[in-house]
Length: 228
Image (tube, rainbow, N blue to C red; front, side):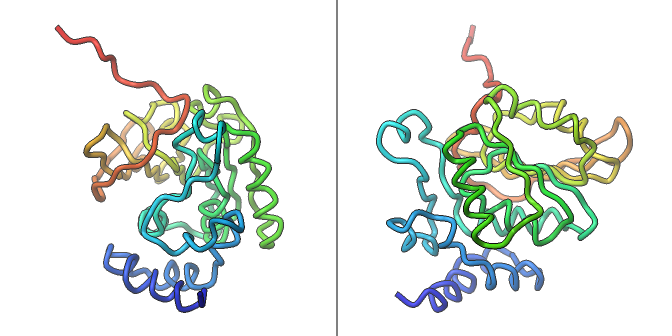
């Protein structure tokens, strides 16, 4: 398979039709070797419009949501953040490290929290191998991940690389005024990617971006299942 042709087709057939038209984002996606963030056996899936599992065997059974998201979803979230080169970003859910690498090329510094030690170490190696040196990958428990990183707050942007039932106020509070948070919110069969913006100290705006279904992030609260 010719990876450069596959990358071109991925951008033109998957990403552009999803309203990703920012020239800087498209140029970055053409430059970044997505396949380098996957194990060799899975690299052929790097350009496919699907979620790619990052764990296998017993580990996959314990963390079925550990995956690389579809290229179009990553690209659209990146575009919606409208990052500037001086900004600091928090990501929750490092996975392969590819989204962190994309963010790093658009901002000054990325802090990325990963709840699976084996994924955190793999992401570090992927980032090191591809020359991305402004990302700090932190191993955290699932409960800690849901709390964000208050010690380094406030952030210009926060990305949740997975879905949640709702965005905790503790994360929104870690945004600067003017800061943005993107997350996929809701429950199957319909979830929505949503953009939150801190307008004033105690005021937030939000807008729905697109419908999708994304695996859950570990450690975030679920709605009560009790019904009268």
